[in-house]
Image 1 (cartoon, rainbow, N blue to C red):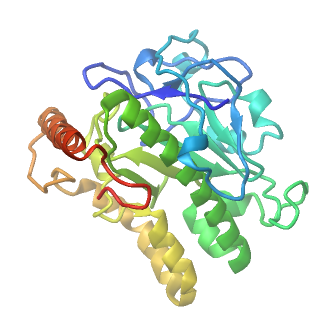
Image 2 (image 1 turned 90 degrees about the horizontal axis):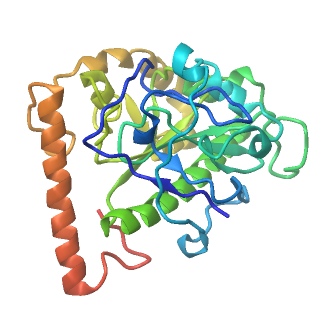
Length: 324
């Protein structure tokens, strides 16, 4: 049975001591953190879901229960903060379904994991990471890996330290799971708000945690954990710090100037200092509290417009139509 999850409230507060994206240490018990009822959380109504690595399933086949927020017991995590190696620890677990709690693990396959972001920067925010060893597609049960552990440190490592075939296989499997997560998010959007909105899938040019991971994040950017200009700018698809997965896949189709692209990633940190503007309408915003109010208004306007469209046409989109 698939885990279900609730969008975070926009009027709650949160204590954050982490970098841009973080996740708690793996444990067989539930991991605590400050003000945890505000985090994206699944209900504990079933086991962590395992899916085929061949690609995303149809939305109709996902099994999601009712939305439910619940408190978890506090632990060492709330006192010492998350480890920068937490994602690496997750990725190297031989049996993550048994080792990670339902409040950490969303999905798993032979090649990838999807976990809840400990400090989500939007109503829905998840991380997809490749497992190690990463088995060959021809033999998913193999204990051998098509690449080294160090080549999975970050996006730059994948682009420069893996063979072309391994690079393509790893990114495709990550994209497949990200698409599965996106479909689950859209199900929950319909249940919680009555409409769907955009979901962004991409990498940070310079990640704040060890082990490459793909962000799957709703574009509302409404979250108590979004506290600084750098937080907001790090997820703007138009700046260059947040790199959509489809763009990276285009890179590997023509890798003639791969080194140049990797060099550009190294210089992306300065993009986080870009003046604060709305990622939806480009309006200049003087501070984060005003940005939050501005984004909330965008969300309510989008919701009102979508619900009117649904009332008029009976649907928001057909199965083969794009929303945006």
